[in-house]
Image 1 (cartoon, helix red, strand yellow):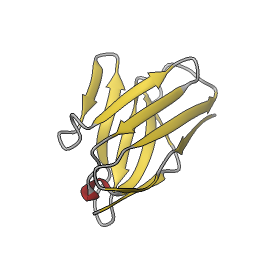
Image 2 (image 1 turned 60 degrees about the vertical axis):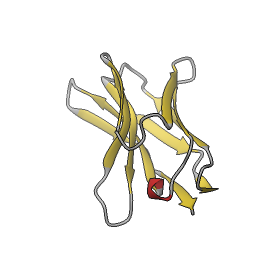
Image 3 (image 1 turned 45 degrees about the horizontal axis):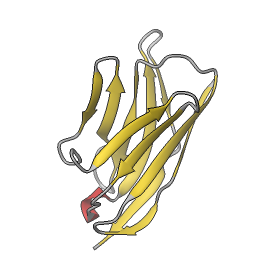
Image 4 (image 1 turned 90 degrees about the horizontal axis):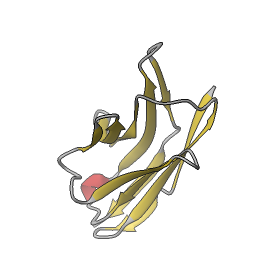
Length: 116
């Protein structure tokens, strides 16, 4: 069983930075997709950044401000968030998908709050 555990959320002022971490544990194997989603109150969950064999993609709203990276030796995914805006306030979720068997894994979420 795979577990994804996020950390690093918190309260920050507009213009500030935070780094989220997602540690994967359990039966580790190659994911076809790993990335970050977020969900703001009253809104649908949206993709923030994701990585596949084809590369890394970012939502237009975060491009140039957020950077995702991965440390394979630690089975950890990171999201460096800079120039944060109040509209970035949301619960951020780490996700991993495996095409074979149509399996998806989600973390419990970490709250990011950006004050104006």
